[in-house]
Amino acid sequence: MFSSANESSIYTLPPSIEPEWSGVDQDLAQAFQENQTLREHIVQHAQLMQLLTHQLATPLTALNGAVHLLGEPSLALEQRQEFLGVIQQKLHSLTTLLRDLMALRNVETGKIATQPISFCFKMLVAEVMAGFAPYPVTYRFGAELPQVWGDRWQVSQVLVNFLSNAIKYSPNGRAIEVGAAVKQSGWVEIWVQDYGLGIPEADQPHLFYRFYRVKHGDRENIEGTGLGLSLCKILVENQGGQLGFESTHGAGSRFYFTLPIAPMIDR
Ligand code: ADP
Image 1 (cartoon, rainbow, N blue to C red):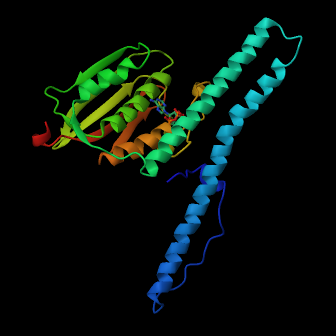
Image 2: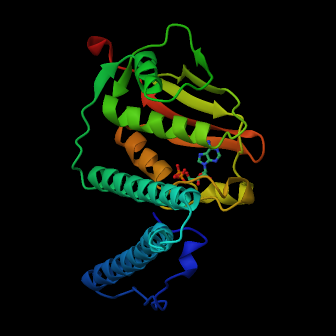
Image 3: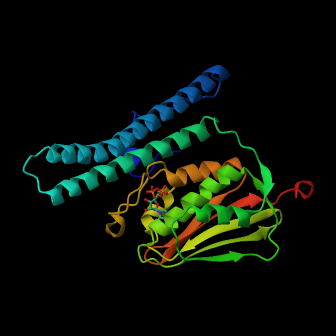
């Protein structure tokens, strides 16, 4: 799940030779399959550890440098403040990384139980938006939007990620759109549209892999962990829904997910 075209070349085990199963004991075939699965897990784990090491090493190196330079007695006040700024920013990166990693782990290990309820999506959007600094948003809610069914907190986390990405990757400051409508029988589709940087086509297949970040000059100064979307995927799938996106590099992106309509008795 957490490998990508880029990552798969980092660690590989020698290929195993697939035996001919005809006439061979079923137990042996099963043992071979288990061995294969284990080998894949080992590779994935090694890739994950390498990516994590990189994510930790980058801010730590900058922190080290800034702290070292701050020790210079001859430093002007202006430079001192500049280095303090670097320290604050890198500490913020590490805190965010830890927060995202813990959220991912808690969801994956089932520490956060999914407690679906019937709720009004529009109200949730209003609550989530109140937590953001003011930003222009256009709302496009379908007429008579029914109550949806899902874990309200988990859905709010998906919204937070989609909205913060839409704003973060819109350095032009253009308004974003948030919408919801009944898409197909029994399901509501929720989307966040922005008119920002968009995503290069070559990166699009890898976007939901852990730690995957688009490496393009147009966003080299935008901070992130590459964990938000992989977390969203798990959270939406926990509700039985699906998520996806459409994007044109340089023009913007539309991220969406589906939630079941709440059953009649719970509305
Ligand atoms: P992060 O934003 O922390 O890097 P995410 O998992 O949320 O991690 O997103 C992965 C990558 O997808 C980002 O690095 C970014 O380049 C790209 N991306 C996500 N959302 C958007 C968006 N709305 N517009 C443009 N690029 C996006």
